[in-house]
Image (cartoon, rainbow, N blue to C red; front, top):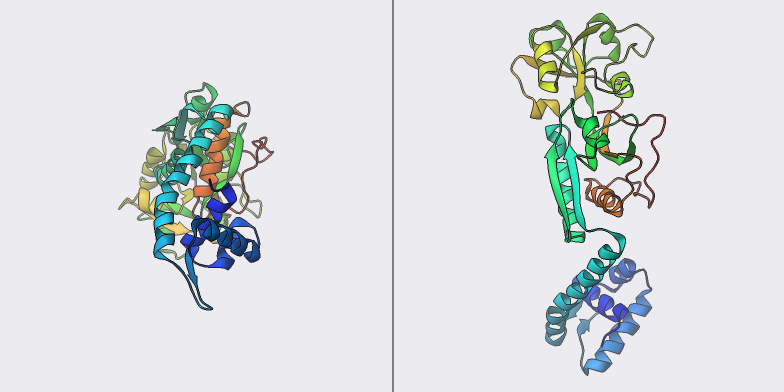
Length: 314
């Protein structure tokens, strides 16, 4: 029987065909890689790789061993992972949700990676709305939600998505023809408001009471959903700062989206109840972080972070 290091070294070198990259992936020295391969070749009784100063290639014997060994190694890894999942509780069902159509692809990438890693845990995916996103987390209808930050009163993971802010205005509005705008224009026009159930921190981030210079921002009417809020914009009842993906996911001939050059980007990620610290949830947050494109530089740690002062809203 080959030891685990021998199996990993051989299969990695068969994939990379480069001693340096193999050593880097396995975090061992190139000398150690050579020693391991030579030991396997002695046991086989023949060369597994043809080595020159410029290239490394599998011999026919090496190719046969790689083709037969790879599925066996994968099966062993899967068996170990399933055993670990059972021991840690990464089984059963995890209920995940998204808020906003454009977040769905990112969530589905996380679901796919999580499914590869933890095939014994079923994932149920659903969509929530502004009106029930918080309630769904509080009452346990969902375990974790991909939503915009901040989401007050909830624990959160790393930011998985970022987008620039734009100002939604009616197509016939005087601002519609501008190339870019400043947040200061919010003081000159009513701003459409989010539903009452939306958290205070989220509202301060999306529809602030004052501009950066301190000028008061007039409040416009509130909408019950994002589509309803855009309809209020289209009717000329006010303007609304939104993410730039609204252009793609909410295109409307009666609404124009103008970039806000001095606004901080909108961030989105996973949020969950602070008391929900199951291994299923931890594993899903890790998968979502790894699946992010590009991956977020701050890896998810073993303990979910407590909700911070700037923590999260629907």
